[in-house]
Image 1 (cartoon, one colour):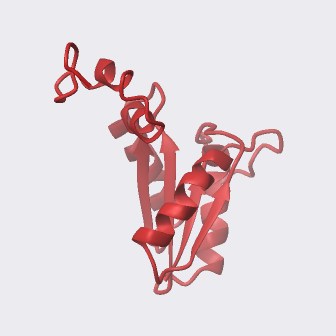
Image 2 (cartoon, rainbow, N blue to C red):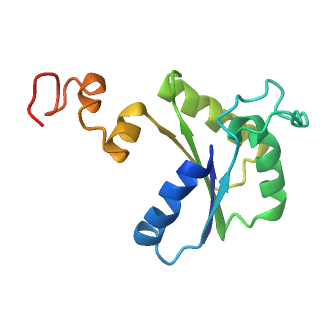
Amino acid sequence: MTIHVLVEGSSERACIEPWSKRVLSGHPIVVHPHQGKGTLPSVQTSRPDRGRRGVLDLLPATLRGYAEALDPKRDAVLIVVDADNDDPNKLEAEISEAVSSVAPTLRVIVRDAVEETEAFYLGDLRGAPARLPRSRHGPGAQL
């Protein structure tokens, strides 16, 4: 199975490519970096705005193309975006709704990264407790 991973930019690509070789060995991974997160268009069937190059800006058009070009039995799509200030559950639901609307036959997984995950990945263990107050590394804990 080939997994097409849609990400915001080159830093996510740098994280996912080596990780996928260890965790998903045996499955070809193709990472498609974009120019930021962007926003989902209000009309899912419209052509993308040429000036907007974020993963969400282009998502409906990308998925329509994948729905025609990929084989749902042999291919899958993984969408990874930062939650930023968005409610992660709402963001994931909005993206999933767009997927169902424009490419219902595709095998698509949606995942949103939260600041805690980014802080952990980047090694900011001192900054993570502010975002993870109930963790064993919460405020006042010794690192």
